[in-house]
Length: 273
Length: 325
Figure 1 (cartoon, rainbow over the protein chains, first blue to last red):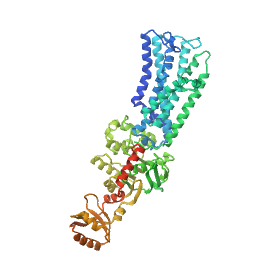
Figure 2: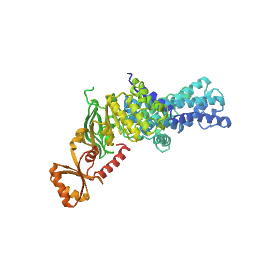
Figure 3: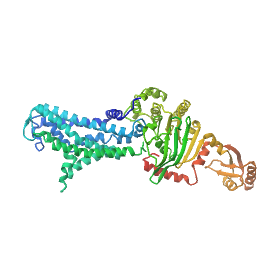
Figure 4: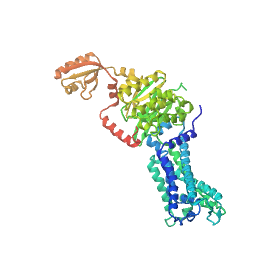
């Protein structure tokens, strides 16, 4: 008999996500927001000139996904990630189904890692979907034209497309760190709403911490800052420092969150349901 | 593997703060038993079952299934299936998909038994409906189906007939009897005495987390021996006559039910009838009666002033465990 394991749990977690409305709420918003933004740009000739790449949205569609990433980092993408990651463990508590799956032939650790993989998969899908839709909608509105980098050089549309893809990939690092934090709250609180709201509050608080005098030195190590690290790719030559820092700073948020969540999940008494 | 008893609990204890939900429980379920774990609500039955399934960690002592410790690995549950409290499934998936899910978590073989299990619990026609729309009885049956696809040697069932209508109860009991006849060992918790009397060959009676009796059901009845029922025109006077009388013991009275007591011999009964006549209490009934399990159950699980204490304990436990005992 083939032994079930983490991959089995992962496959069934994806199947469960496919059957839940909140999955489509998150993915739907990830698709809809860039479409609404593109329609607004098409109707109104103005541009958000105060953010990087904002002034280029009437020149090239490739600026659209980058502006969406910038605006989305405050709460939109963290909320989308938290919608599923904050629910994926707490949902079992809510349904009383932990006892159902933990008395079969998979270990608790396998159940946990299967859930982590599913939550990460969803977050990755949401960001990629949003980026792809923003790119297509942007190209329809403003054309597939060269894009200026932050250093002032002009990249060909093809090169620009690669940079957009790279930016999305770098953006996934803080998103997965947010997912990990949401998983922690989901495991500890055993309540979806508390985990989703808690994650969002955490994300917003990090943005506000730097306002406090004397704490601005923390900025490079805040998760919120890592949401801008992809801009390193949009320089000539590429500035890898913020990206490398984002890699370890995000890991420093994600790994302890997951480690604590796993410990709690392994040791907890499943008494409800 | 089968040399080890299906269930062996030794000094099993679970404390929630200062509340002891399960208190030094030791018992053995042997192969082929239909074992009744009997006690009032809040006595710690479900908590014990959860420890047997590795869902909660004992504070002290150990629970072994077929000699293995379910706290260490789910491998210990290879031959075990069942449910605690009401079986729970994903309401947004249909019954069939729920079973496929748990079968996938069991390994490939379990998948091949889904149709048969659905047939056994008579849910084949509703397998395509979302579980969110199932009645309590249907979920209970789906829980049995989910257990059967593991093809267990030991079935652990927590109050399997609770919430079922009389027809559902009858079907559930018939199913358990059939599975037992096919060689499955069954341990079921219950507060329904009729259920235990009908199904079980051995019982453990639990009170406030402690085992107060473990053994054969027949032995339990024999232990109680014959009791005498007494109805009089003035039971208060009769109780006074009965108290401290030589050869009379274990005088009990539940509400309006007849007084019950044990008599050492017939002479003691003769003496008593004369004393009652002298006291002015007219005898309506003075007859031997075989003890029912219910009498024994109340005798073992209720003590003076216990009802209030048990109620308080139940409330505190509920607060601590989020409703589960």
